[in-house]
Image (tube, rainbow, N blue to C red):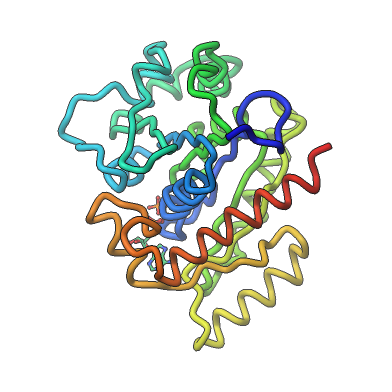
Length: 269
Ligand SMILES: Nc1ncnc2c1ncn2[C@@H]1O[C@H](COP(=O)(O)OP(=O)(O)OP(=O)(O)O)[C@@H](O)[C@H]1O
């Protein structure tokens, strides 16, 4: 399906929050699968050395695959890195723990922030006819995350409906501002999505109220509930929308995909 929301090339979205365990990987997998289910062609780039998005979509970590490490640091061809998943329309560039190596830190400042940017602009990317690229970032504002932001049109922030959720957001926004000033002036915030939301819990409601007050329209209307089916799905190497299509988690990620596409249609000329 051609994407009406972009005139040229895929829309590249980094999924970022330097806090660990807030739902970045879960959002990357399930938003990717929901967009693919809507008929879009999606590439998930796993930039987290933990490689959970890769294993969660069925890539065997013991297999010596060509990975995003090779893409960034060994000039590998995108076509050799991209692998199919068991979700039609969703392909993945898998990660390995090698990504946490110091090689990237040792490169010159000018080069090291643009590694992913340059890799994703290889002409061969056209062959995949991608509509969206989602980048699953590590839980830090390290060079890997900066690489993702430099390569992206926008940043999507999962926010766990928990204590201290909003702490750290100002640091994240500072990094976005720095990337805008130095490398990617058009970097936007795609939105903030509340994850692991528990309707019976006052804390979730309080975090939601605080986030909406502080961030206004940036917060997606869709919230992702805490749902055991979401957490079970990766052990079966599936997104929740395949594992349990009727579950609340599956419905939420479908709604999030639709809301995001609608927002893009409204804002893209
Ligand atoms: N909506 C949800 N309902 C239930 N469990 C969830 C939900 N979202 C995420 N989880 C669980 O929370 C844990 C952390 O999620 P996830 O790995 O997506 O976070 P992350 O931000 O990518 O973590 P890291 O910072 O380590 O990369 C996982 O065990 C995941 O299965």
